[in-house]
Length: 236
Image: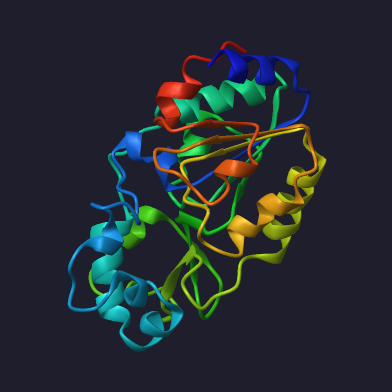
């Protein structure tokens, strides 16, 4: 913790890159841990149900799973989200890059957030492009439809879909220009997002994750702890 505090104190341009482990302390389950979503037993694998092809061919089943497992309206920002918002507010943190779709960084007060995999809070009609709120998805039954008759699709990146090019560009630019990069709550096994770390050219690469990752040996500092427990101890 002393080393982490020294890194954050001396850094002038910090970028935070986070995954599912950032939100687990808010009660949102992760995906790849032993008790995560992808290790639960379903007749159709979750990776399949969260694919573009499944969305197009089994739309009703997709939304049944999506409402049940991908939306958590009771989740609130935890200590990690709040500390990152504080770091940004005090000029230490330049950007948050997240693989999460829960919107908790913005709820905590973070302004510059690049959502690699989209957000459950944005939903658009596939026919006319009209925006629809999360509440409309939750309160609808079956396949949610727009007034024009089009299907409303959550603005989340499904398997088989490409990441948003502008979000990629902003994320890579932020990582390439920061002097300290904090990676947290991610297994660094989901590509292309995990590959963005390779653009880092700064001084200190910090990794905070409950389990070991393929990047551990390349980091300046590795903490196998809960993200919120670690970040909450930082003095900005």
